[in-house]
Length: 150
Image (cartoon, rainbow, N blue to C red):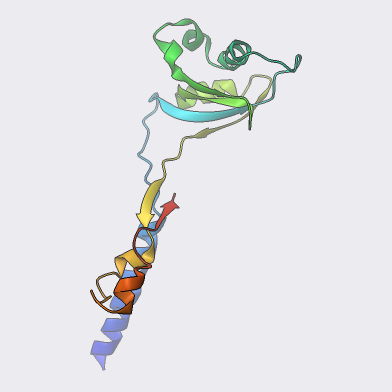
């Protein structure tokens, strides 16, 4: 009688840890003062409709801390200026710099970059059950499919 109960408890614990392992985000801990890539969303530039790329970059650099915008070594911290889908930019910033940026007029939000990793679809994990010949071998519906996970 104790053996089936132990079996069910082990299955429950294993299931719990499996679910917890799937929910863990692959984001390393960041020390205070470390640079991280942020996607910063700002209000659109007001004025002309035919805004040039250098105008947009200048506008985006105005949100960066002064020492970051002036220094030639730090000028590479502005990674990309978005202007079609959203108005914003990606930049390498510290958490303190993001907090200071929140005070500026036109700032909407800043989010840390998220890394996505591919994983096989569930059938690829079960491919060992399928026989190497027969109809399942001809279909091969579990091979070559990939999904994306956060």
